Length: 319
Image (tube, rainbow, N blue to C red):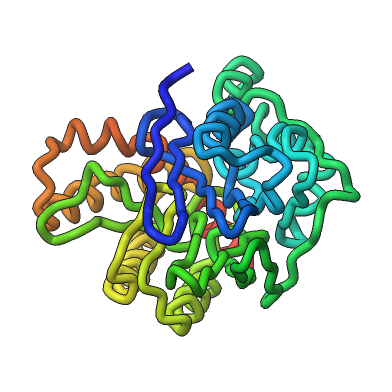
């Protein structure tokens, strides 16, 4: 098992690397307050021993964790939720109403991911998906507020990346925990210009117009910082939101311009165009990574983004 990699931020927020695919790709967060704690996102079942070690290192007992909050049910965010809940006797799982059934019965998640990856790669990437006891699952409507310790979290319905996505606003730190709704920003691409941010249009529920509305709503809260699952803290949210909005339109334009038959042929065209877009944008951002390194680091994201854009484009054409 790889060493635990954590970053402690102010206001008792800890970023924990979930060791998904590579270091610094995916994180989850531990928040503490007055003797209680919350996990936001969980990583996969392979992550759970790391999370328990972090609790132990901080002197937090498993019984002090009040909530586990996956932002959505994609497996790099929620695959370990069931396994983690087994270790936390007093915790409730908070989840979007559209995602609750998949936490209670993960069979469709397992079948879908196995169809994509095959059983061997699925097991290596995600491990075992464990069902969560229905009695311990709380469906979170838009605007629900939950308290732990002396802290309050606001849960927001934030579709765009996925219909079953929530973001978590923490007024104490001025932060929003955004899952995938605020895109991804890898620290390898930070430059003197700041962080580089881009959308993640993973299949199958990407919705351009809804996402733009969601971004505006998040900015209405005037956050001071954003905590991304992919990856870590970014500041100056308003500037990054403007870029993300522009890049969402860029992605849509790339998909609509793809001149190929629907399906795998068009996915390949979209992916190639996304790759060139990414290299160009990162070079303009002052990134010193070679194009080969950029493609190596971003290969999985480029694949998933192209697939998600094809699904969205096919749906748009049908409508």
